[in-house]
Image (cartoon, rainbow, N blue to C red; front, side):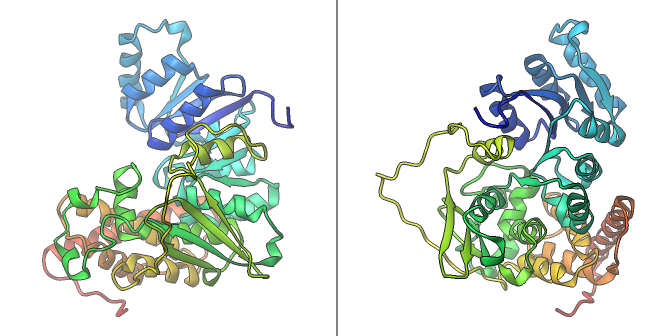
Length: 407
């Protein structure tokens, strides 16, 4: 049956998000292979309560005591006997504990933002098998996390469809024979929108993604192509590549997720349906492959595959990501923090769509890049960058802002 046919206990960081819900569907379909050891969520106590009733994890973790009390009330309302309740914990320390617990075999890191960074880093150090669905872990702290992975021999299996596709393509040859990695981007809702019209884009328009159903921040970042910039950074760390060895192409059909070119000119492409359960199952079962959890592609249907170069002028966030990765140090941590603040400000109506890139660029110019020696330092730089980005936004609202980068 293969070397990984035993029951695997899974800690799911981010169980109530879209990746978490899809992961639990895989566990639901494969109860003979997987059981949830711990479910960690943020504030969605009602959905977490439903998950607890169905999956009966050993531990459940939420953001704070207030949410834990709401969760307790939700469990009582569902009439789940208290003897069947999991151990209820809260806070960052509890996340680390469930990610490194002796009982846990596999950690699926899917918490959005840097909230899951410390737990994922400690899971790497604890030699856990890891499925990585959280871009921010490597965007904010790629050097530290990958150094720990090398020291412990831990492999991070990417869950993002593009990196998961790349991981599969790399298995076709030797790393030293790879000349470049090509990541595909859908182009988002504004692929054909003239650049001059973007300043009038509303949050509602930006949240209409043509292919994927995702959370608000990642949907906005897909529209601006910042998400693809994060993927370039993540790919550099995952596959030990320089930014110049990672290219982005716009592929509206989203059928091809990644391509790897070898030195003889051969190109390996990974294609599959646009359903995140495919890469999630791949990560959970690697190096095995199980039957597809979703409908397969129908190759008897006529289809067109298109590829276009990205417009770096129209989508400056992609350029900023490349520049931050080339610059090294903590620039990418600042990039991620400033982007999260800028996206929130756009969604709240504080700044126009095109100002998001300006806020990020100005924050990068104001926050000095340095070499961080610990996760604690990374988190402090993240806080500093967020404070700076908020100051930039406040200055913009008073008309006092002047971009300092000159780029």
